[in-house]
Image (tube, rainbow, N blue to C red; front, side, top):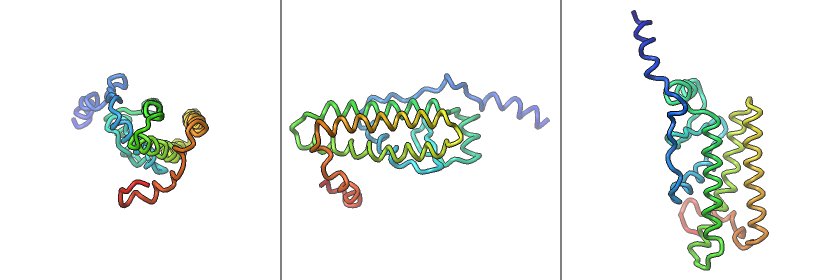
Length: 175
């Protein structure tokens, strides 16, 4: 009896992956917030791409990501790539501005891109058993590094004093 109820309930839990609808990544504020999120990823954490939150890896997370709200590495890689590409788009739009607020915003984006590399490395650790996904993450890290190196070459002033952003987190005063 219990087994038949469970069998009838399981299809309600299982969602098809193609039913996954990612939220649009059009708002600059949303993109920059998600870029900051990437810098907070710790070893053993995964990204819930539907709700845009971090989850600690474990059996409950795996059950949730497999049956209840299907999520996978392809979704994670798509989200990471979108966040990084859109962040560089925003940076490129503002990089030649003379306005002080735009220059500060560019510095903050560069800082967050550098911090995102740490989070992506931590994701690579979390998924260390998946060599292909690890390679995908390495390529993404190389793209970030190459694009930042290109920007540093053409706009070195934006890379000055980035380490000071670590010191201002607590009082929210920008250097």
